[in-house]
Length: 273
Image 1 (cartoon, one colour):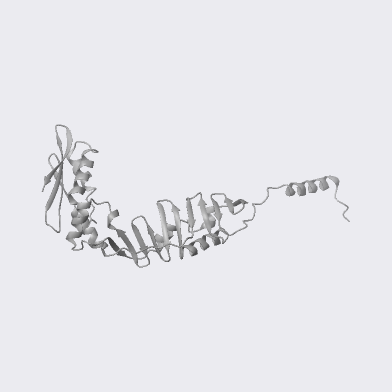
Image 2: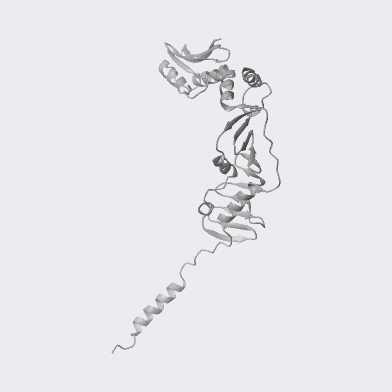
């Protein structure tokens, strides 16, 4: 018959219990669901609100929203022409080509679900992005990676950390611009109207940034000749440099800029029209 444990075994077992008792404390339980808070925020912005941070302010009014010079609804995206970066004279010329002088925007159809998610600016998986919950002070919750403040309805007011965003839920209005032209037509007309300005910028940039070698000049010019452009740019190698050229499809005017070496210096010069 086995007797009681010997004294050394008793001490060993007692030490094990003590060590387990003073182990690292588990992380505090999150008193709110950050996943639910993110979803409540997205649901609220489907009605109305604003998001500030990142590239600026985004205004939501139902399924329609506006940011900068873009207005978006489920049918597609509208681009305000005044924000396209064209000189006034080039914008007017493009609209003249299209016989749409009063147009204020272009329109491009297509899904905007991903763009809306990006505009809201919250991670797809808020719980993973936030990390382990650390502590709470009032309606502010600190996680390993972010600090989040909620309103009494459980919606996010501020999200600071992985991205910085401020949210409000005040009623907003977003109007669609009108009249509009299709994006494809605008792209072609605007590239045609700004053809000379585009070539000038490219030619001067190349002249200021490459070595005085004809092969290098032409090769660098070709990096700007995007085959996907609505109005193509072409490049020809010259004995002392390269020629960048193209034709306006509306006026049929030929445009060309030459980048060349003269007396050891690179120069850019318009040669046509």
